[in-house]
Amino acid sequence: MKLSDFDFHLPEHLIATRPAKPRSSARLLVAQGDQISDARVFELPKWLRPGDRLVLNDTRVIPARLTGQRHRAGAQGATSAKIEATLLEPQPDGTWVALIKPLKKLRVGEDVVFSADLSARLTSVRDGQGMLAFNLSGPDFDAALAEAGAMPLPPYIAAKRPADVQDKTDYQTIWARRAGAVAAPTASLHFDEALMQALADAGVLFSFVTLHVGAGTFLPVKVDDVTTHKMHAEWGHVGPAAAAEIAATKVSGGRIIPVGTTALRLIESAGRSGEIRPWEGETDIFIYPGFRFQITDALMTNFHLPKSTLMMLVSALMGQDRVRRIYDHAIAEEYRFFSYGDSSLLIP
Image 1: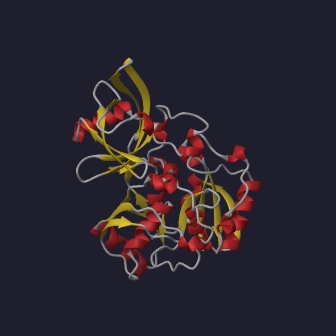
Image 2: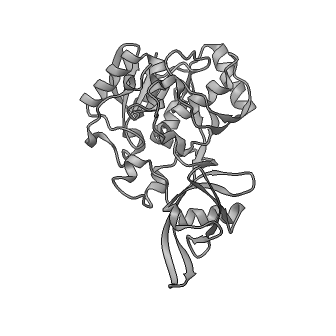
Image 3: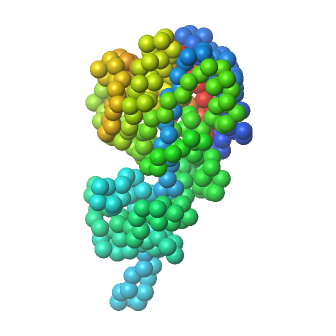
């Protein structure tokens, strides 16, 4: 299985830089087996059945991108440098792993001032990433970060425009609850209150799980033999209530439909034994063709980057040839791609 098997050409103009308004007006490609239909997200209730269960990721994206100044006194007098930091992962001791640009302009022990309230000291450097110790913790840190930080938009959007105030709403799901993600579970961005009510009225059920999406979700696959790729790890939690709800739906004949690849990876991690159980920890599950799904019956997901692990995941669910036809159709019909783009409902 070669990396080139998951490649395709995407015209640049199909990369969405803003979401559809309202959220549920985005287009929805529905693939049931070999049949492809064009719809809108607000029509989702008509494609689902009473008793189907959507599994939703309630992670909350933190405004993880910070811009500040490093001040230094030296032989030439006082100097300063602009420093950008993207927070990646909190550590047990309260420090944060961060991507720092330019790292060469910051020495261990020096401080970066991000706002009147928020600053951080570089305590060490590992594998090209910095460890930052902030001057605040707990709710005070959260409040200062909300004020000073910007949403960590994916590289393919950030290359086209900077994050702004609108992204703090647009790049967050309406049910976001548990802070910790540095990327959004983007399939869930299509849901608004009206759609949730319409789904509930149609007898569709909901369960909430948590997977804190990491920046590793955007890392390219660098090996030609995809089976040798090492996945990044992300922290997840499936509580007793969600596990029981999902298990009961399976028994009653309802379909389990994760919204987004993050929710899918989490429930498959919690269900490797064939039965879903409460689960917590880091998962580096890698899903590619040949994977045997234990819990998932269908998937709602956006359109993914060429040669990405997410292309491999949807190919595992639907089959490689079928996914090629789905993507050919999406490009021909000018669906909008990636995080702020349109969505698909994939039913094997």
